[in-house]
Amino acid sequence: MIAPFYCELSEKYPSLMFVVIDVDEMTDFSSSWDIKATPTFFFLRDGEQIDKLVGANKPELQKKIIALLDSTACDEK
Image (tube, rainbow, N blue to C red; front, top):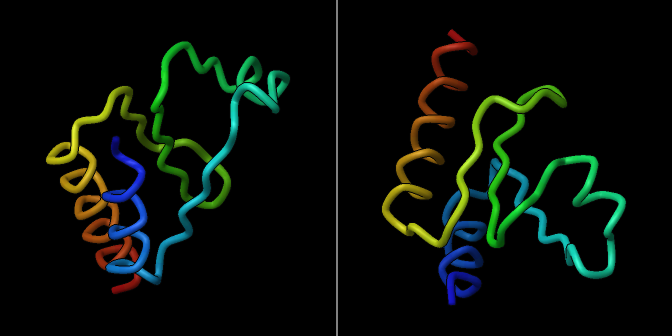
């Protein structure tokens, strides 16, 4: 259900990298990242997890993306 919205976000924010992982095919990955439910969104900076969202909450997903962009802009100043 959230996939089309996620795709829209990836087009709206081209400076960010959006990745989709099939946890059924990549069970080792889902175990190593402790994914218990889908969808799960991880927010990374320089390879480190800085935030996480579990569930298909569109407003919260967009809020976290904007916060990430804002914090990145502040870091660049």
